[in-house]
Length: 404
Image (cartoon, rainbow, N blue to C red):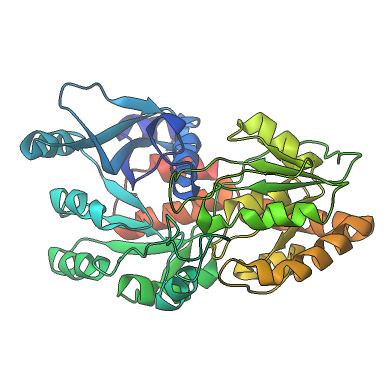
């Protein structure tokens, strides 16, 4: 049957993407969860032939009933309402076929209850079992050792187990997927449930840097929020050891006040760029010699993949999926302030800055890995399989488009 005939027979599949951030400065945090929502919307909104309609559903953002819907990344964002009956009617009127939860938070549950038969895909992005929570809890800001840093409080996600249990007798499909296979081992400890299968649903890394040209002067980049969880003070301290190297912060803080990190008394070779647009980000990552990551914990950081796509190797104290040890230098685990690990950071950066052949090889190999594994085509293949398992892919538009 012709493709056009298949599309005319069936309407598109409507997906409700649930998250608490949407990679939009005007409405909240700029983090990896929000980045994932944007990439999903971009994937389907720029390719209508895929037959997928995306609507964003906020777990925590609230609005009044007379406030117009927000349009971001080409999709409507439906916020929570105080009038629960009006909110329920609004959600029901959408006719959502499938829920894609960006990881899981307890404030997703009202949406799960409103749509008790709608299949769920949980895209596990940053699971934190007890051992990871214990490590994160050691985080301290230098000079504020007696103050608990903002943004490190644990989030209890074990209520997802009840959602799965209830869904079984409702005959609702709940599937789990992750952009990094190693995260599957963290599912039970984080959510209190052990799925029979965790699918590999890759990130869509669609940066196109073109010809990569590195800066003449050695430059290293930091791409993350400037919050205690990311320990940006280590990047500053590292800069003090390399006065002839330019250190660039890409990102801005979400938290303010006591328990937050304030970038003051910075060395002259440190630049604060704040949040930058995509074009500027690609240029800066492509020209950088090294990406430095100082976080106390990461899932599979999108910043790693974006840097590698720009042929920029990584220096880090976390090594998810062995990405850093394969395409950069892993300096080992350092808890607390992380300052005890500074000699290892200095040693690793010295090696990368001095050895151009090493930097080039690691960057190119990392680019090949990202290009092969984390692309739109592989995302769509897995997503189509998940739809089939959930019983919502009988509309042939999705299958047909994937073959084209």
